[in-house]
Structure formats: C-alpha cells, structure tokens
Length: 227
Ligand code: B12
Ligand code: SF4
Ligand code: SF4
View (cartoon, rainbow, N blue to C red):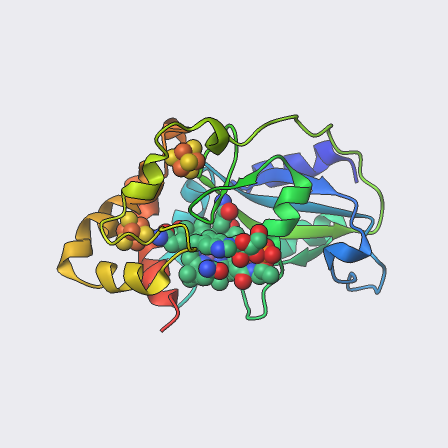
C-alpha cells in the first residue's frame, strides 16, 4: 500500500496519519495476525479534534453503552485495516497496554511534556493516538521533521502552576489529587472547560478541542481513573 492511499482511507474517518517507523525487536511491536513481523508500523489518531465531527455523529457516541470512543475506533479502524491489508493494534483494552507513547516518539517528532502527555511542535497538547497499523511490507514514509520540544524554550512553564491541586509537582502526575478534585463541585471548571494545566499551554491554542469534546474526555477520564 502507498501512504497516499492510506491517507485517502483515513480522510473518510476523521483520523489522521501520525507518522510511522520500521520496528526493531526492542520496540516490542507484536506479530501481525498472519504471524509475520511488521516491516512498518503506522500510527493514526486525532489532531486538534478532527475526529470529533465523525465520532460524535456515530451510533456508538449515541447508544448510551460504555466506551463509545473505543468501540467507534475499533469499528472504523478494523474496516480500514482490512482494506489496507494491515493488522490493527489499539492503545486501549488493557492492562497491559501497548507502549503507544514510546512508539509515537519513534514515529514522529513529539516530546514528553511536564504533564506526561507528549507535545507536538505544531499541534501542542491537542492530539492523541487511536491505533497503530502493522504492515508486512515496507511503506515509504515522509522524512521526519527536525524539531525541538516547545517545552525547552517555554519561559514560565505555565502548565506546571495552573492545576488548583498541584497535580504536576515534578514527581509525575498525582492522579489521586486530580481525581479527588474533579469529583467535587470545586472541580467543575476542569470538568466543563477541560484540564486547566493543559489549557495553560500557549502552544497551538487554535487546536484546542471544542467544548463538547473536552467534556467528553474529562467524563471518560473521571470514569477510568484508577480507584
Ligand atoms: C493508563 C493510561 C492513563 C492512566 C494512567 C496514566 C499514567 N500515569 O501512566 C490515567 C487514567 C490516569 C490516564 C489519564 C490521562 N491520559 Co492516559 N493513557 C493511559 C494508557 C491507556 C496506558 C499508559 C501505559 O501504561 N502505557 C504502557 C507503557 C509501557 O507505555 P509507554 O509508552 O512506554 O509509557 C509512557 C507513559 O506511561 C508516559 N507517562 C508517564 N507518566 C504519565 C502521565 C500522564 C498523565 C500521561 C498521559 C502519560 C504518562 O510515559 C511513558 C514513557 O513514554 C495510554 C495509552 C497507551 N497504550 O499508551 C493513555 C495515554 C497515555 N493517555 C493519554 C491522555 C490524553 C490522557 C489524559 C489527558 C486523558 C484526557 N482526559 O484527555 C489523562 C491525563 C489526566 C488529565 N488531567 O487530563 C494519551 C496521551 C496522548 C499524548 N499526546 O501523549 C494516551 C497515549 C492515549 C491516547 N489515546 O492517545 N491515562
Ligand atoms: S506550557 Fe510550556 S512547558 Fe508546559 S507543556 Fe506547554 S510548552 Fe511545555
Ligand atoms: S483536570 Fe484539573 S485537577 Fe486534574 S490535573 Fe488538570 S487542572 Fe489539575
């Protein structure tokens, strides 16, 4: 398959090409369904909420059953992978989880931010990974853009001081502090407007998710948080 054919298939789903790489053993990419080792792994995902109009109008988003985004992703990406001759791998469904953030750093120029989420020089913190596609054949990939992390030159690092409960103290993400806050009335600004730390980041402010998408992810996070 040519990359251009894959991007045409992706355009009909709202998902975007998120880079790719030729896996080594150390990358821990599983074998394909046909038993072959993948020659190319391509990541697909959301950029700036591009998938939202497609997902929000889907049957899964409106049937009231659990995990609508994961179910939508599986249906759409399973079909796309079958058409493209790829084996799909998903970031959800664990534990254990496939190391998508490690794979993402192999696939494109993204960097760990102080929030734990990867930052992209153009998309900022407003992107996510929905699946990986394992191809048996080598696929021509665009040259990787030379880029530096925007965090390196970010003067005040406002993301680190915006959380009302100090969930990002340099010791990782204090999930319990965050979860405790957003479960209380005082956490309503985070629930309706989105994570204040993420919103404090000045990079790619024009790619922030819409209100409904933000709220959807926050509700899903509140449900999924470790108890
Ligand atoms: C379990 C999980 C969580 C757990 C625990 C996170 C943690 N501390 O590890 C919880 C439920 C808390 C969580 C929360 C969120 N998560 Co989460 N999560 C995952 C998941 C499913 C597995 C992570 C894992 O264990 N991987 C296995 C290890 C071996 O893989 P790895 O790549 O080598 O590990 C990396 C991560 O652990 C990362 N990491 C370390 N500390 C932290 C802290 C945070 C907050 C995050 C996000 C990552 C992170 O660093 C490792 C090295 O690169 C991944 C998907 C995936 N399969 O990777 C998403 C994932 C990491 N999450 C993601 C996101 C966006 C979030 C949220 C922002 C969700 C939201 N509301 O929108 C929140 C953050 C909270 C907030 N205030 O908004 C995205 C990150 C995208 C990106 N740009 O990097 C991922 C990749 C899912 C996706 N579909 O894209 N998450
Ligand atoms: S506010 Fe600055 S340090 Fe924080 S994620 Fe954005 S660019 Fe990086
Ligand atoms: S959602 Fe709110 S409480 Fe949780 S980390 Fe973000 S700013 Fe802090």
